[in-house]
Image 1 (cartoon, rainbow, N blue to C red):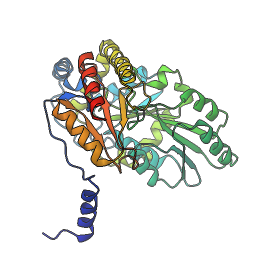
Image 2 (cartoon, rainbow, N blue to C red):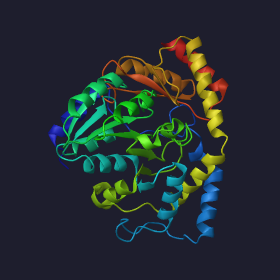
Image 3 (cartoon, one colour):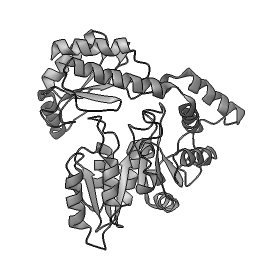
Length: 375
């Protein structure tokens, strides 16, 4: 079968840059790469409780059977969305099939022609893709740059016919750092036509129900995007906001309207994972491991981006060099992944360490001491 030469040239170019992506393979290495921060994806307790919940409630069905606007809005949706709204201290939660679907749906439908989107320059690819589908104009501001953001807000906020949507992440996936959400919200709340949107994908579970709630900023945020495939260890996502926002998304978010709903099993797993989050001791263990990692990396004088989250990144310039060091760590028994350009800008290539509640302090010290001999 003929493969288009234009596409082949792009693959060749990517390979020549030593940046050709391949699917990951299962291994038995010590986990410092997965997003399973609390160990919920591997939890037999959650698995067994989910199964029992489905049996007890007679949910003996494998699929949703259709979109939520047709046949797929089974009653577990209402149960779980009500649970999410209560736990996240918000009017409503609307479940999407993934974080990508949620971000695409929100940014492609909510900002209108004539509106403005101001986004952090390091914002996630799913948000960028949603912005590209929007009819609004978009402008980036410096990473975590509150002053730069304020200048841009003042530039555009004078137009009473425009709504301005400011989008950031509470924990950035490629850096592990956070913006000053308190100061950002104070600036935004001075302007009635400016709205804050926060992606909490990497904060949920690590910081309880997210950084927005930890900082008590629920009423300062127009929309929160949460995902369940990381700290909650399952699948799906939700947009948290007002009842009007929920109604709007049901009517206009195409990634919500034109897709089959989640299965009852997926929704039951979300419910049980939240039940476990409320009572689990995993959060405490994770925070202790994060502090130990910071202490040890400082002792060894390693070049990590400042972070208090589960994500810690060591800058090692060059795709070939960072891949070689990752391979050496893998050969020592540690599952460490290199992050290459173009995923990050050239010369900002890095090793990305993801910490978990189930990592031991000995494993953390050992992997960092090995890293110190390679860099």
